[in-house]
Each structure stands twice: as C-alpha cells, then as structure tokens.
Image 1 (cartoon, protein in one colour):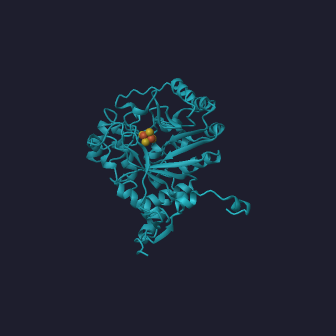
Image 2 (tube, rainbow, N blue to C red):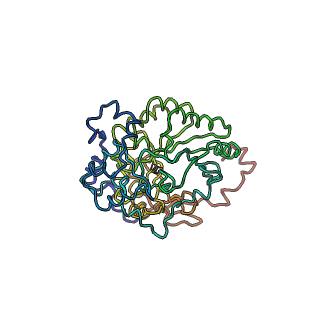
Image 3 (cartoon, rainbow, N blue to C red):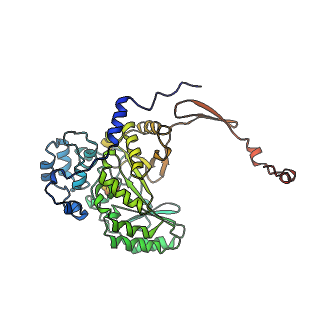
Amino acid sequence: MESPLPSQEGSSEDQERLVALKAFRSAGKGSWASVPDAEWNDWKWQLKNRVTRIEQLERLLPSMTREERAGVLLAGESKLALAITPSFFNLIDASDEFCPIRRQVIPRVEETTTAPWETLDPVGEDDHSPVPGLVHRYPDRVLFLVTDRCAAYCRYCTRSRLVSNASGYDFHPEFDRQIAYIAEHTEIRDVLLSGGDPLLFNDEKLEYLLGRLRAIPHVEFLRIGSRVPIFLPQRITPELCAMLRQFHPLFVSIHTNHPRELTTEVREALGRMADAGIPLGNQSVLLRHVNDEPVVMKALVQKLLLCRVRPYYIYQCDLIAGSAHLRSTVSRGLEIMDSLRGHTTGYAVPQYVIDAPGGGGKIPVNPGYILRKSATKVILRNFEGKVFEYPEVPEVAAMAPLSDSSMALGKD
Ligand code: SF4
C-alpha cells in the first residue's frame, strides 16, 4: 500500500466556501429596480435592454478597468460583440476585478493578443462542413448551426469567428440545404442544434425546425445546446416547454461555468424543462480565475444536480484566438477531476475533454488511475491514493469455447 494522497475534502475554510457557493440567490433587479415585474420577466424585454455599449457600462460598472475599457471599445468592431442581459449582469460583483462572472462576459484588451497556437476555428469545424452551417465530424451525428445570435456573448467562445458577426463571417444558414443533407445521409441518427443559441428563436420557428428534423425517419435523437437558461431564464416559458416535449427524445445541453450562475430563477427555469421530460446535461469550460479551483467546480457540479442537471463535460478551453488570458492548464483540470472522482456523487462527475486542435474530436483526459498494466494484472490506485491489484483474465482462457460436456452439465 502506498501512502494516501493528500486529503481532497478541503480545509474548513473550503467547506465554508462550498456551502456559500451552493446557496441559491435571486439575480434580483439591481440597477433596473424601477422596471415593472411584467417587463423584467419578459424575455423580449431582457433582450432589448441588454448591456451593449460603453456608456451603459460606465454607469453600471464604474469600477471598469483600463484593460476592460480598451476591450469594450474593440468589441463588435473586429472582435466578438458585447452583450449582457440585465439579469445576468446583476451577477457581476462590481467591487471585484476578478469576479468570475465579469471575466466571462466583459471584454478585455488581452483578446487582441493571439498566441501562435491560437486560431479562429480551433477545432476545424469549417473543414468538416459539407454544407454551410452543418458540421459532420463524427460518423453518426451532426452539429446543426441555426443562428449566429446569443443572448449574451462569452469571451472565450469557440465560435467567436461566427457569432455576433463581428468578424464579418456573414453566417446565413440555409435550413433547406442542411435538412436535405441530413435526410440524404441515413447514417445520421443524432442532430445537435446549436449556433449561436437556438432557444432565441421564437416558439413557432423552433417548432418548425424540430418538426422537419423529427420527420426524417433515421434521426433518432435531437439535442439543443443552449446557454439561454442561464443568460435568459425568462425565455424558458411553460409554452416553450410544452412545445419542446412533442419532440422526444430531445435532450438539452446547457452551459454554465460558475455556481453563482445558478440562481433561483435559473433553477426554476431548469425545473420547468425537467418537468417537461427533457434530460438536461451541462457543459463547462475550464477558465482561469473563473472555475479552475476544486472547491468552485465541486460546488458547481453539486449545485447542478440540485437543479436536476447532470454535469456532462468540462472542456479544456479551445485554442481560440485571443483567449490565452482565460485558459487554465491541463494539470489544473486533472487536479480538479482528481478532487471530484470518489469525493462526490458519481453523477456529479463530468468527463474532462480536450477538443483536439484541427478537428480530431473530443478526447477524454483522466487522472492516472492505472499505474501499471501487464498481461497478468492491472495495478490501480483509488481516489484516496491506495493501490490495488486486479488480475487480468488470460486471453486464451477467456476465448476458449465451452466443451459439449460442460454445456451439458450447465456449467458456465
Ligand atoms: S452562448 Fe455559446 S455560442 Fe454563444 S457566445 Fe457563449 S459559448 Fe459562444
């Protein structure tokens, strides 16, 4: 037996932080206190009143730094646009330059620095696109990009070449062509609608699209990737949920990175989707000074379960141009995975993946649990660092057919 790993359960200070991070709070109305409830709770009002300009930020975020100011002035010109819904904006801690919410949505001048290994299309989506707006990288499934608009814009977005049209990508998907391709390729059994954010479509448009995909006999499974339940929980109306439930099996992958994003309003919105029978999964991106700490990630995954969402993936941040200031290390990601596996509910443990640069697809990355492997045994370590031996079944014996006599005796 080797000596155990240092305890991952954390200090009492970590325990207190965990409890605090898991507390559900309302986003509140904040600077929009005078707005009537009916408007505040209307998703179209939230979209119309997004924070998009420097003058608004000067008023709402007087602590804006020089780096942020310079970033904001560039946003929308040659860089991903600035847009933040009022309800998400209220989660920003104006007194903290390193606020994890702030870092995700307020542009910074570092976005203009591109490391040699960073590109506009880091996972090679355009090279796997048989028709505009459709990515066919894996054998049996496609990514169906439906729009370049989002409720708010994440500064590390893998598709920042495309979303918000700030870099002139001029994205105009032709649904007929995308759907015709899916109909012609009978190997496609899984369609993931993404973008941009599909839940920004009105109910009628989304119903039309989902209906056309559901009418293709070989499409077994539909998915929607959306950050709307987080940025715009008001959009998750009972009417939307009633419409979506016609298209089962339909899964929704949400995207949240920090436990503070899971407010009481978000929990209720996710509950409405879960009540409509929609299985929910979460994808997070590992981000520096946002969630690259074991206690923060543990609070996030446990809080997701409280919202009826299964943590699905943690992505190593793609090599998107201008994202180096937000990228954490793979070592940090592995440390976080080590702090989760065995230390919390298995359902709360996502898969950590690196989306291979250039289009190699998602590659799972795990801490080393297999210490040694030979033809006769596997040496493993558990979550406490204790070492165990598991005998390997001899290949020949495992393959040997049963003899007639052993079958007659009912042996197996
Ligand atoms: S919501 Fe998704 S697609 Fe939109 S900016 Fe954020 S990461 Fe990109």
